Image (cartoon, rainbow, N blue to C red):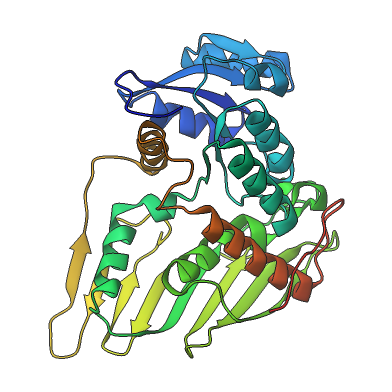
Length: 338
């Protein structure tokens, strides 16, 4: 798909779980988008989802959805253990893809998807809504303009209280369970948005009887001397805040830093400044809008959520998971040197 396109972008949704429902709800309120198909491995699930959201086509298989030539882009909302297979199938069929986070189980799978998209000339983007948030974008602009000097430290956390039973997806190794991939991807992505890929990755944490991490701390280091102290948990309700400290000030995000409404800029000798940025959209709509903008512009990658950045985050997650001793069935650690 290339060049300007006045008519709505036509979406397909692959999977029918809670996050797919949330995305569909937001997408259906966008005047320049149409949801024309949904696909699931269970025909009855696809049919129920289609009826619920007024979607005209329901496919009882991923292959049928991917083969629909009327679809411009497919949103992949399966558990991340299936992202490689689902997104790969869609790319092979010639569809553009927006794939949920975490992008894949490991960097090997992520690289395979990126290589496939680039070889086929198809659009691919990780659904990292934080990068599309206007408040976060305003923060990066201020930092690039030197508002807090040189970044020296990033602090961020994301934890849920649980407790989750052993058969919950967050504790299932076969589904890529654990705090790191499911929640830690947000603090890691936040830190790397500002500092790039770290030179050093250290991780400590507690593993469940199933072998996934349930409470994890990360220390990341860069050649510049900057550091990031991050944590994630599926056993504790953490503040879910973030702070960026520079040589000339700091920026603090309240609870919900991964889809913020505001932040506070602190600089010596000045009153704290509350910064907001309103665009009238919700989080899922922002990432969908970026996909549609890119498709209309004929782009195969988003400058807001670049694929090289996604790969860099996956390398950090792999390195941390290797240090924690978390193994997923059928996945390679592929941690690399860190």
